[in-house]
Length: 297
Image (cartoon, rainbow, N blue to C red; front, side, top):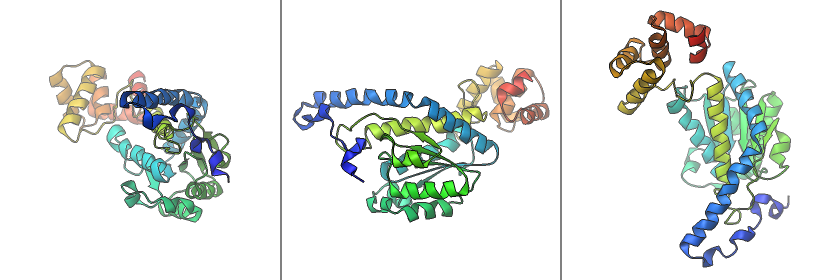
């Protein structure tokens, strides 16, 4: 492959004098280029929506979401996965991140490991990936062998595969069932995909995980109603959510939180409908855990 021909490796004509600019003008170049990122992601919303629905469907049947990547792409996947449990109260492992080189690569780059497709497949297999899970391969260039090896294995298993790349018609896009290709253009610093490509990837990952969690009922309105109140800040947030939705005062929201077994969704249904914990739990179970459906039943 002619790596120099990749969009992510091309030279950006708008930043050729970057090192000669005064600091504020240099930063203005970064800022102008970054403005292209959200527009590039916007063009991929139909494909992102397909991926969100596929992930939510898999999770509703007991499946999980796996991210896999090398370098910056791998770190972004691990980051998104690690933030799902505290935000949405889901079990660790429901969203999992795999990075080439393993945990040490999170803090210290291990570039050589990305060239091994067998390692990608082996790491995916070792993580317990199954046909009912969803694999999202992340590679800004769209050609990382480590990622392609994992995608090939997932395809052989019959699993849903998603690919995020920032190069048009990439090998990764051709390999997956749902390709996502935000194209923010050449980097301000040529080839440094932790910049625009990394930002585009982060935006897509935000949508994939958050969108799936909304579809699964872990969000009501724009509130994280499955938050686990394990510290002072989260207890306060839980009580504020109960106050907002159930329309009760501070003292009542605190009481409801405790009576519900510190389950915010149960507390909301109890307070809003003025019913017992058992009744609220039954309503939520019938509604698949979705607060809106439980309240409207």
